[in-house]
Image (cartoon, rainbow, N blue to C red; front, side):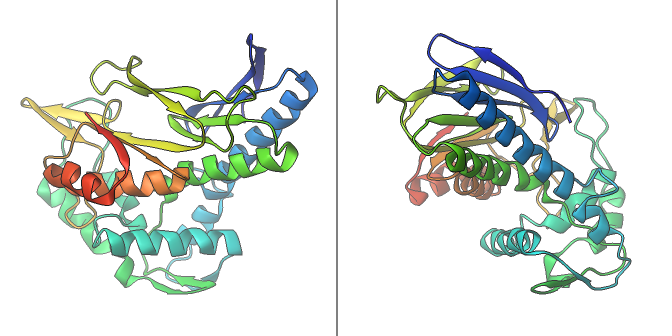
Length: 295
């Protein structure tokens, strides 16, 4: 758990901390320092709680408990069950391209910018441990086959953003708060003067620079891309966005997709489904009728 650093800008307070291996910030449209500290603390606590509960890297997380059942059935709590239901729906919508049991592919893939691309034999060795259809899930009882694991990494951050916004509203429903966890953003209300928050969308090729600025009165923005996580070998770039059906990166996918939706979870769902369309991503997004940008 990191410390929260709260600073005062001319028109709002900004709180910064680290969670889920991402830089996080909360912009709070108030001049009340006490209120800003309360909101910042609540948002930080929300992010850290979700990270602690669902991180695959922690020995005390729910995910670790599930992943070490060795084929035995386990009863999960309501929040975990909701995430499992959502993940199952996303698997159905993507026709198996998205699958929370595909996290075992990290044993073959490490997207660190190097040229270490796994062999087909490496991938084939892991594919038998992937497939939601192999899981027995009858809420609240979950049973994985021996050797299988789950990983909420593909949906957890967007869920955390929406949860943090809800927590901020519980404290001050009339205060505009922008929550930004690693580039996934949500806003519930316009600012005091009726103006929008201005959100930068990172450039896919020039890391750290905005490709455009988006005015956001309310709603959410999610971005999926390979600006920071990729491999490069023999002139070919391998994105970290894997197709669970093949174990390989999606062919022909854009470098980056950004979607605006009512909630961060919705925006993230659409970006994920679009990325899995590969070269047909733009067609998919147009048919979805959402506001989007492709790089």
